Amino acid sequence: MKEQDERDTVDERLFLRSVARAFQVLEVFGSQPYPLSLREIAQAAGIDKSAAQRISQTLLSLGYLEKAPNDAGLLPGKRLLDRSFDYLRTNPVIERATPILLSLRETAKERVDFSLFDRATIIYALRLQSKRETFFATLAGRRIPTFSSSGGRACLSYLDETIARHIIDSSERRPQTPKTITDPEIIMGKVREAARDGYACALEESLIGEIVIAAAVTRGGIPLGAVHIAGSLSEWEEQEFRRRFAPLAIEAARALSD
Image 1 (cartoon, rainbow, N blue to C red):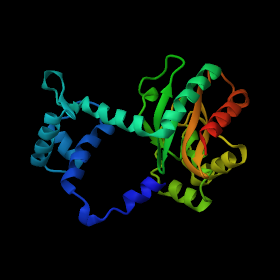
Image 2 (image 1 turned 90 degrees about the vertical axis):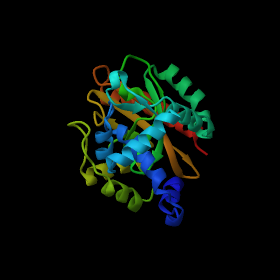
Image 3 (image 1 turned 180 degrees about the vertical axis):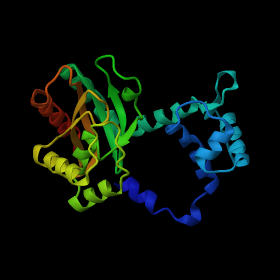
């Protein structure tokens, strides 16, 4: 919440558009995870080809972009991982969460995750696999919509209902799977359930065949993120999964909350 407020109140006189354009170039790979040409980068970033070329060459020289094999285009560079490392090691909540999640995975024998709340989205900061799973779905740094995720709904349940409804209404609410709930009234009903039960549950809304339970981590009543436990519907019935893992997620989240 505080981070979003700070972004919204930046003094426009101090805003460097050249820096913003450089980040726009890097961000195009978020929706297009394959080598891109300068023309494709320019089109996706909303800048002209000349600007795309200058920015890309700068990022190449700094290691934040790399050339794909056989000159097939440009890709994100390894230096970006350094900045991810910087963030992870300087976030005290992630440091505290790591041993708790390791213990939780040992107990649950299922995938456990820790996500950070970023209003319209959540972003996975820690992901501990227990089995072979979909590659991209288990990577730290993956960002998914708040409205359709168990962790997002758990976090929304700690907000004033007017604020929670505004976040839902202002989200694009594009379905990620055929099972994704997009109706604002039904989503708010799920948020109220999370407030009542202390956890949220999502069925196949981000990945087909997946059930995920999550409980919010808070500081002073403000949601910071969530602890998730994910399983396969080929192995678990919904009610049994809830009964078995909801208490574990709630306990872990409480251990991380102030």
